[in-house]
Length: 499
Image 1 (cartoon, rainbow, N blue to C red):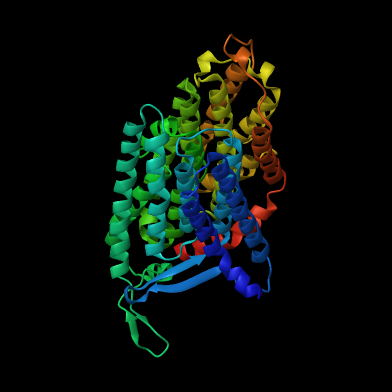
Image 2: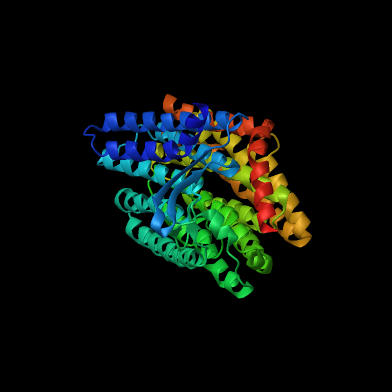
């Protein structure tokens, strides 16, 4: 019975939010749809937490599920919860209840459609994080992205059409490039036979078959860039990042939280799970180029963040800098660095969602996001200020906060690869402290003005959402061992395949 329970987790994590999203479209009342969205996201979180418990039960053989879907073309509904999958599905499962609680009082025109699309996005994200079949991976990749197009274009800001169009062009181009690469890899896989030796399919979309394909160095080189560009756009890293600040600025706050906190991890996962094992020769050839791009993006985005007067754009550029550090570390292929990246994917998601919640609460009450128009918020909203200070310290990786351990491990990996790159990347810590603490000082401290004098303390549901973020920051900062336990086996397997 335990085994039957364990194998259901991956597809329950996908199909429950998918079904919940479809049911949401049938609701008529906004209050009911909000409660349903929150309730369904909590159920998904419970399932994710249970998967962690069963994953540590040594009597179980694993958290895998495989069904022959389109067997004559070698496609199966194959999903698995490895260490990285469990971390990212947990991040997804935690993020959505926090987002729904924090924005519970927000009013959206046609709320059933809004929340339904968000739940479909959650289902797509879960599918990407657990897929071990290339066709299924691509299917959920698109399922996660498509609802976001509609969410941004319908509920976004005044310039939402331009921002959404840029987002569409970038992501659609990246998806097409990846599809070309998937088809090429598929056509080079070996045939599938049943136990009796009869031919089932000429080729396979299975990840294990993709790993087994032998490619020449020139083939790996151009295939590497097809996949990397798709993943780089999604993260995003320099110079594929220009869609991100506009999209984050114009999207509804709940959608921005999903994009920045969770969806960017699709690109990081793609590089780790697909790119490194499939194209080791190309990774070894182009690692320096990618690291140069990533480190350039770190410094460039940090300098731009310092210059921003808009809170949303400041956090958007901050996210680019943090993701750039993760991308650079991945291409060092050092074990300590990869473990740090996996831990940091979870921690970055928690921290960045916390920052977006604070910005959302300020804009909702005061109607502005300009740093120059704010000041003295701490006098009127001390609880919000305390929460923000903790999140800000986590954003600059202060010891005892969750980001410290991950960044320490990532910089260790960078130092092992190149002291020069590591030193340049270390500048980002100083720059992050500059723009983060400058934002805290100018927005929350100093004298109040006529606008911020009208600020009120945040409501109970908003305090709950931020409290969960703060607890997660200290919990994983003081005791990160459970995250280490999840990542070590996955990293060891990836490095073995890469070598």
